[in-house]
Image 1 (cartoon, rainbow, N blue to C red):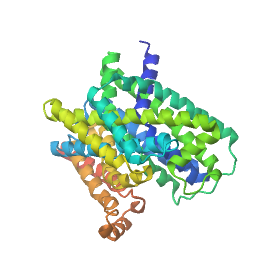
Image 2: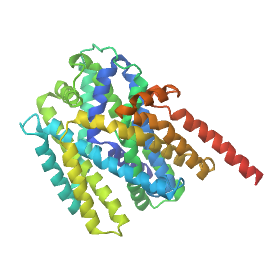
Image 3: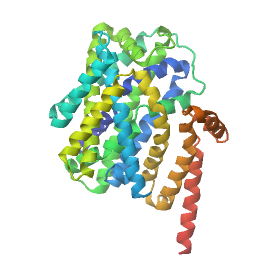
Image 4: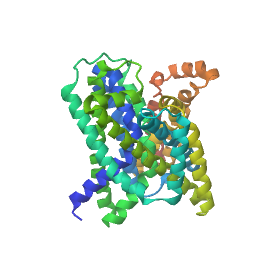
Length: 427
């Protein structure tokens, strides 16, 4: 295969990996609330929703392993615990969120049925497809992503030329930080470490190239995927800002996305987009349930019974959580993301840097420091500990923005590398 063509194919594959339909509800509302500061929000969103996930792919290219390999330098117990946490969060939040998005975008506008009914039907079908591992899902996914991307580009294009032009003032105290924190909600960093290995393995078998050439291919493909995400995410944030005067300030994320598509494509276009988003959400849910069940199956010596039980539990959790509205699920996700995202980001970065700067000592020390300094960001959501957590955050640089772990992690990385280097010099 032509190398240039192979790079582009790999780039589109990576783009499809991160392009979750549920993520589409985030950027337009960010644009709506950021108003004139939309470009600053984009910069923040780029960091956690594009740059970090793409770096996760680079880390996979370097490791050539699985999710477990990301934390193995810390300890086997830590890595196993980290894997379980990631899969539990994936099953409990982004998977059910796809059902909630489907109900609010594709069911509620046409049928007066309760969310629990949609959630039950949705996850029964998810379970059936996960158990049968139908190739239909893969085929649908290949066609859905390009069609949705084309529709979104049309929405963005029309929005740029037909907007009212009355961009509202920003409602964010710190647009950059808001963009960074909202990028957590895409779960793309988690997606990168969970299913990135699948892409890497696929590229390995298809390209038949050397390790160095494969890494080069993946890096170039990563830039293509990153540019695609920037085009869509940035365009939707801009579109939300351009049409900010047409929405109420408290409009829900679904209302903003649907309203934006209606104002640019009309009712028919909005209906078509809603159906496609619902199908794309479904493929995402099947992928999460299948991936989690595969992981548990591997632990129990490839037991089919373990796979079925895990898939059933995932479906039940999906039914319960998916019956709530999208806004509630997003709010519930915040504490979990505050806990696991800093560690995930640091693991990605440590696995990207050259080996000489990523010894076991550095891994263990930096992860421990990151964990300790991110605890207040999690405790603030516990009523009895909220005041204590706020006070703790006030003593740390960037603590008020829930980013107090960044500077300590950086300083510990530098200090531990100096210590490790001096030890080697003595030896």
